[in-house]
Amino acid sequence: MKVIRAEKAGFCMGVSLALKKLESCLDNNPRGNRVCSLGPLIHNPQVLERLRARGAVFLGRADDALPGDTVLIRAHGIPRADEARLRSKAARVEDATCPKVKRAQLAIAEATASGASLLLFGESEHPEVRGLMSYARGEARVFASPEELEKLAPDPDACYVLAAQTTQDRQIFQRIERELSKRLPRLRALHTICDATRERQDEARDLASKVDIMIVVGGKESGNTRRLADLAIEAGVRTWHVETPEELDSADLDPALVAGLTAGASTPRGLIDAAERKLREI
Image (cartoon, rainbow, N blue to C red; front, side, top):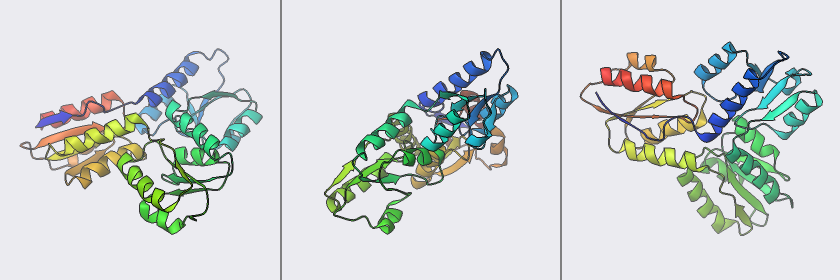
């Protein structure tokens, strides 16, 4: 099978930095205290299992931290109240928030400082979204689609700040911004979608136009990976979203087809390489 692999597939800068910080904490832990992350450091089960094998602990709540723990703030960021709780537990806090997410958090805090309401384009249950919402100084509401935004019925006379989860679809966000600007004269839009996300999405769209099928490798809980798969499906291409190459064994793939291969920002290169080898062997 012929395979065309996306150039931008795999770890983004934020994920790489978070992993390096956690591994550095594991390597430099002379007292043998716990090295933890509040929630999964990234959304990739294979990487998390490798880190667990090295001794990393993934806490479910800030209250689970113990005095003396080293606790990393994960790449997605965490709510401000959780960070304050960690520090009150006498834990050593290391901030591994992606720099693009941190910039979005601070931009939301500054833009809403006068009490403007936040309209956030994102997934309400995603950890990054919960963190971003916590930085709003006024009312904060989240919507996952233009249809959900309509149900919020924003007041034309009120002040609003529009922002997005950093891994959302830029084209959809731009359409939302254009439409809202016509109806909300006191709207301020923050462009918080990161360039790495845009580049991956643009490349996925382009690749989908050139191949017969698309394979997207990455964690099923990864929002940016799911959006890459959604983009391929919207382009009318048969698409498989897999976490491991072994999942391709059950796919009935015609060796005469041309396959496009891409991956989410939290997918390690080894998994992408293995998926490419399996496809080429068909």
